[in-house]
Length: 113
Length: 116
Image (cartoon, rainbow over all chains, first blue to last red; front, side, top):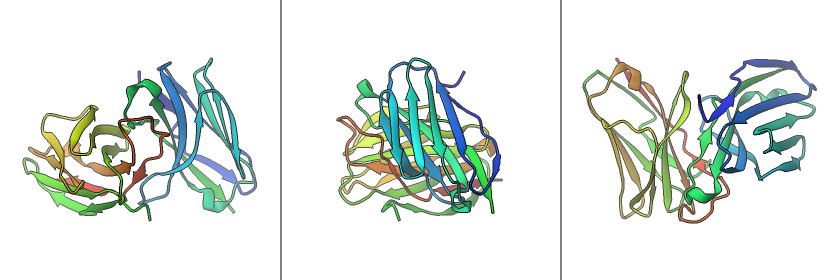
């Protein structure tokens, strides 16, 4: 079993839809939770990060972490064609003292005009 | 532009050969990470260097090795290449590594390796 599980999709939605992306994990030591976005032929770039449980909002994006369920989510409101990309969840252990991230497999999202 | 530079962008080689991928981190970043991205495995952590020293190791094959030089650039060496080594290899950098890192890694655009 992988440490981080993410449905690879693909996920196709119409413009303006609300998108929900999710990851589950098994390592209870994970403390930092991130979402990266990767456009085709590009490297991943950080979209949002949260520490421990809770919600964080940034414009049309909301990240949620539920440590009790080992489940994290990213919501995209009013989705736009420019949001079409692969979204990767990533996690980091607080105590590992390194910056290494464990990534989910990524969910490919297509937003159709 | 993340500020992380990787060369070459594309590389085609034959089985059994050896290649070297190069990475220049963002100015001032001390940590360099190497990741392998394939369709079936996703983004897999290979190895991290901090200021010239190995800091963390993932599922890196024995045929692969890396190092970070005094000017902080890094090289990933892949030898005795197999078809299954075909993948995108990403380098990332961050400022920290010894201390808590908020998780922001800055990725280069990757080196696409094709082994025929």
